[in-house]
Image 1 (tube, rainbow, N blue to C red):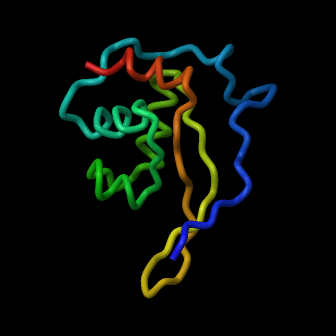
Image 2 (spheres, helix red, strand yellow):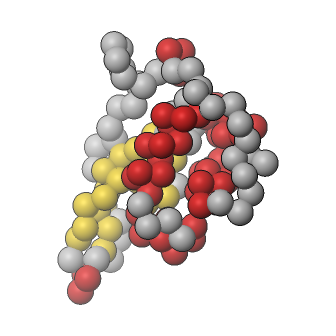
Amino acid sequence: MAVKKKKPVATTTTGNSKTSSNRQPKNSKKIKAGTKLHSVISYLADGNRLDRFKAERICHDHVLNSTISGFEREYGVIVNRSPIQVPGYKGSLVNCAEYWLSRTEQRKAKALLQ
């Protein structure tokens, strides 16, 4: 069963939301190798996309949405997201988000990896 993609959610808006120009990293410390955060960000920084099920299999991350949220908050890197549907139990569709980094954000993320 194929993955159905929905309309992407905008990640850059005016005001209080996520824009590269007004987000300052709270943490300039490198992300330690061997950690869950390192494996998730390393995978995304290589140009790959992740949803919660891929993250479980590939990066052993059980709570990808929280990992992404914390990463954005602590390091100021914007992670794009889009709602998708993936096949679940007995082929039923499951709603979740797909995450990826733009080329600019990939460079920022790679600079943070130890």
